[in-house]
Image (cartoon, rainbow, N blue to C red):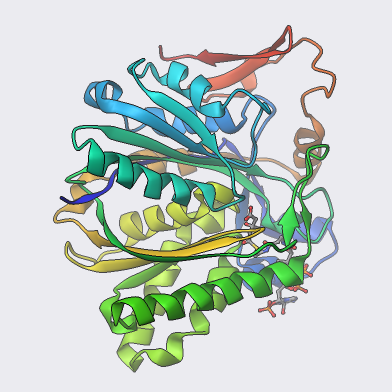
Length: 390
Ligand code: HMG
């Protein structure tokens, strides 16, 4: 039985920052951000968007009545959780109006957890072939104003329906994974910004990639020639390229050109959104699927997932015939088109506006957020969500 990604929805908040203007405001050569880091724009979440609303806005784009009935497992990957106890998956389950006879859980391992969700979903469908699973990667990446990590922030969500006979990508069984306890990036419970050892995180990302790629080749006997494209977790677009470059000497000249060209296609959306942590690899896959004009059903895509702390995994999928007919290209073009650029002053103001730490009641100005689902306020220590289209 083929099991894999049947649908992919994506949402980014409606504000963005131009990276050239950010560099100028910080007294940095803009080429460092656009070439050295490889980012053009950075999505910015207003206080009315959190991991739950971003996820709901991504999922609403793709799920239909049949999905609502058949989804009996919601796996919500995030490192921007809103509660230590109640999972974001339960809020999402309600906002989407899913079948109540479902399991709903939040998963955490930095940027890796949506991949864990996908692998668990595969097992669930192997045992329950008529079921569908909703897997989410939703996050807001925050390092702080004028920090080295600032140019690698972002916000957004990817929602995937995993099922048998998937319309987009059938996942293969072989995959290799690796865990090692390291401190490259973390966010203690008391902090709303990440702590990071930037250079070390870059090295470890590549080290984990090389480790799982070597093991994968050993396990399967496959080589780069078996792949049409490789997609990477994209904390910033230069990072995946650095990892790809470490293995390109294993490819033929034409193979190397193909992988480099497809890498460029796979980062088009990420260049405009920035890091969305758990969803970044899948945003890159979406960019590849929606922006390429040569990949056909039957071709193999490799996926490298990395979550600091750290866990890495290399796994693969086969593109399904006519996958192009099951994408939401037009909606994503609209989404990017409708975004509003904010000045650096506005960005700093929006960045600083956070929920009060003591949980006191608040009501937000909803006119500033056009998203179908938004956070309207906090009451009695409870977040109040509104779904405009329900
Ligand atoms: P930095 O110190 O600001 O930048 O930190 P840099 O000095 O290393 O420069 C960056 C690149 O720009 C370099 O290129 C420079 O040469 C180049 P490289 O040598 O690396 O190829 N550069 C220029 N290029 C053109 N024109 C110029 C120019 N000037 C310099 N004028 C860093 C950069 C990424 C470390 C920082 O932004 C950071 O700490 N970011 C957050 C951490 C991160 O993203 N790590 C990635 C791996 S870990 C990961 O992916 C997991 C994560 O997603 C979290 C999770 O799992 O939840 C982060």
